[in-house]
Image (tube, rainbow, N blue to C red; front, side, top):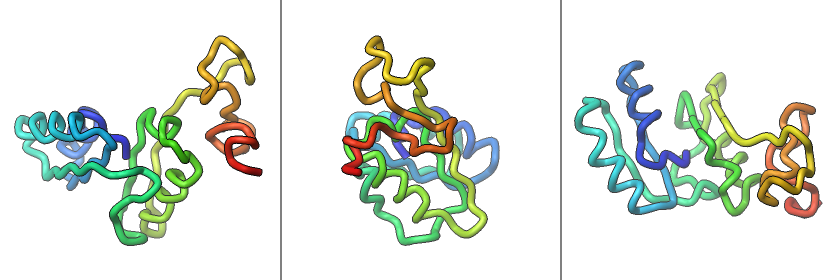
Length: 132
C-alpha cells in the first residue's frame, strides 16, 4: 500500500520468497517500481489505485505493508479500513508513519499535528478531519 518505487516491498518479497502486489496513486512511481523489479527476481506486480478503494476482494492477503503512506491518503480512515479488509484472518499489517513528538505542534504540517497512535487513539488525525 503506497508502494512508491517498490524498494522495501521488492526487497521483502525477494527475501521472503513471497508474491508482491504494489499499489500507489502515482503512475510514475508504479512505472519505476515495474522497472526496478527485474533485479530482485521477485514475483511482483504493480498497479495504480486509491488506498481508500483497494482493488482486492476481502480477506485475500496474508500480509500488508504501508511505509509512511497512510498519512498521505486523502481519506486515511478509509485507507486503514481497506488495509484491514483485505487481510486474511490471522494476517499481519505493518504500518509506519509520522507521529508528533508534541501533539498539535505548529512546526509540523497540519496532517501530522494530531496523529495519536500511542494512546490507542486513531492513527490519522483530529476529530474534525474524520467527521466525528
